[in-house]
Picture 1 (tube, rainbow over the protein chains, first blue to last red):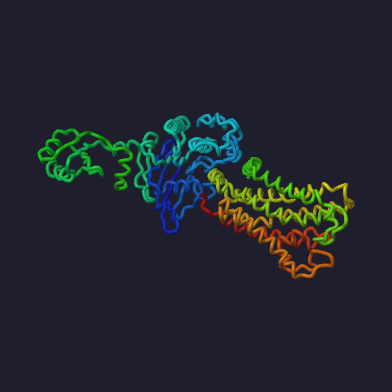
Picture 2: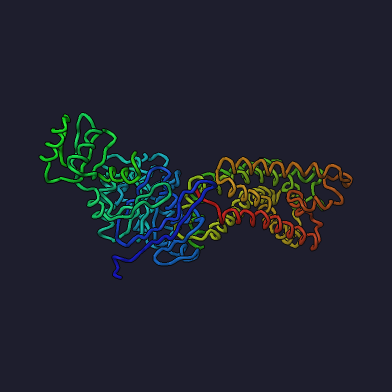
Length: 307
Length: 264
């Protein structure tokens, strides 16, 4: 096994139950070093619960975890020194400045050199906050500082829960570039959860789709691209009749009716003319016929069975 | 653990609540003891063995001031220790790989330090202002007495506060922890006069002649009992022992809660 294939986090049958609510239902995960994992799921899917279990804020009801190949309470604790995290909103000392917040984190982590503070602040674009207390920071600045706190110990594995919450468009691009840069230059493995799937699509190299506490799918960017396959988007005056026509005349059931009435046909991609003729012969009024591909968002909703 | 302790010290230094609490307790002590301290020498003795000199002044002043100071300091220290839960900065420590046992121990050490710095030091400083202005007994009397009293009060202050640590880990919320701690300390100190009232007092004295067992188990009474000049070694051991038991019980319960609690 070479370095890039090393599994840095592994979960086996990881389960978390809160009274009658099964937040995580026997999930199995295997995160490889050097990847950027996009953690995708609706609210309540179990993303934050999983992150809280990894970071030790919560305890599993069942199952086991291993960090950097080590498992067991003591070993997990020890290995957590190698990770950085920002869970939900950043945990900050509001009466302190950005530098003091990082200094507190530096002392707590036992990092000997103070230089890391200035470097990290520069990296997240907060080097000019001076004596401004965190309580006066905007949401975006707090988010950046939260990321800086997570980055301070130069982690091997960085967990960011909704890192672009509250950021303006330029901030989103900066954080995206930062994640890419840290992944490529320092080889940091990321686990990033976000509701903004199109944003995640531009950052992640692998995806974990979570739904109702279960891992629906774990796939790489390439696999996703294959699965978000190209299709013919058909818009007619009668979606039901269109599907009957596709089944009877083009002998295919490889299509999907979208909520807006568009029919996505995954066959006959190189013969749109034949499709158009079949629809026309059936007396349908074709208002749109084009080649298109699924987005990550479409794919996710398709997997969980619609919006 | 040393990183955690350095971190706690850094947090404390940058925590305005700590400095405000200390300032309030100092002002309170100096107003009460510093300005009218000589009256404590002529007042009805609140503890046994009060002498008409600096030791007597200290005994009565401490007996009078410690309980209200404990309420103020206890409530603010509870606020101070519960803030890491509300601001979720305690999450950073857990996620950084510090064991919950070490995090809890470091919080207890801070609690012990803050409660004693904000209660004992202001009383002592205010009493020290009277040195040279009132008769001073010999060092052979004052020094052993002060060592014994400070040792017992260090234990007893933290013993009275240790239940607040249980509230802090139970609620993990600043407002609730502070309010419940203040109410708890108020009730604890209010029960003292109620328990003392039916007991016979020495003529011209404000303390019970023969304290009953419930009183001898009461941390608020023991805070005054510790100031008695007449305390025997076995009574000193008893006081220290009860203080330790009352400290260990709520702290053990608090640790059991914290060890397995879900952090926000």
